[in-house]
Image 1: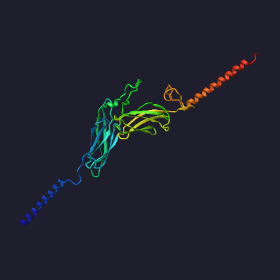
Image 2: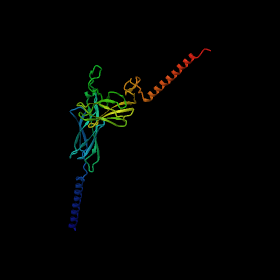
Image 3: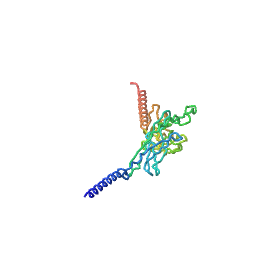
Image 4: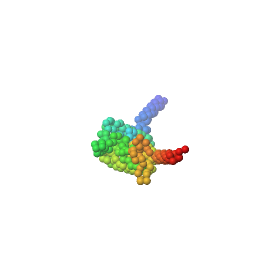
Amino acid sequence: MTRVLLLVTMLAGLGSLAGVSAASASMALPAAGSGTPPVPTSSITPDNQPGTVTYCVDNYAPNSTVSVRNDANGATGLIHTDASGHGCTHIAVKTACKQTVSNTIVASGTDQSSPPKAATSQATYNAPPDATQCGNNGGGNGGGNGGGHGCKNSGNAQLSIHVTPQGGTITGDACGFTPGERVDAFAHSQPVYLGTTTADSDGSVSATFKLPMAVKPGQHTWIYEGRTSGQEATAQFRVVNVVTGNGGGVLPSGGNNGVGGNGLAFTGADIAAMVAAALLLLVVGTLIVVSVRRRRAAPAA
């Protein structure tokens, strides 16, 4: 009997040890697939040329596409990550003549979890003052119109005129583009393509375009848009009606591009009203002359 009790006690002790060991093992070994994926990150390195930076991401989903946007100027780009989830691209940044400009650049893609989840990261670049944004107007031809584009802000275009007859031509200057990139010109409100030009080595453009007749009289916006950088430069201008005479000249001849000295455009309705008033005065004058002559010719009573 004593031997039986001793055997039962030993078996119970072994069972308890086995239970503790199993519990310890289950606590020490994490469940498969429960690891936390690395957090996606972003970093910025200034380029050798002003106006762009190298933007890189890490820990995104391998062999995936990450979209990039600079909140300061709206410039966008894409990054195609490698097998480790790393990738880089160049993106335009906003700069100013005499002050530092903060550029927050945001990346959006998927992380390395399974299944992948949407993820974002961002980095901020404080662009130093850029002297190329201060303009470069020289002495010119005695009239103060110097060489250089005079571009003071990469978001603003400088136009040669701001009021033009329908079908006229306008020269537009702008800066802040990637050197050598193609830059398209448009007239809004309804987009009308004007043409394309190429940015100089300093990222500036200067080109003259003829406005299509589709750009109707009214207020419009000139837009330069860089194909690579996504940079935009805008300016306002106005198109006015014109009336051409028999000799092909534009009426009225005074003012600025069909604009009178008071800054108001002469339209076809204005000219018609002037002609009608002149005819009325001519008729009234003729009647007065005839009446006077009849009185003088009448015999005295």
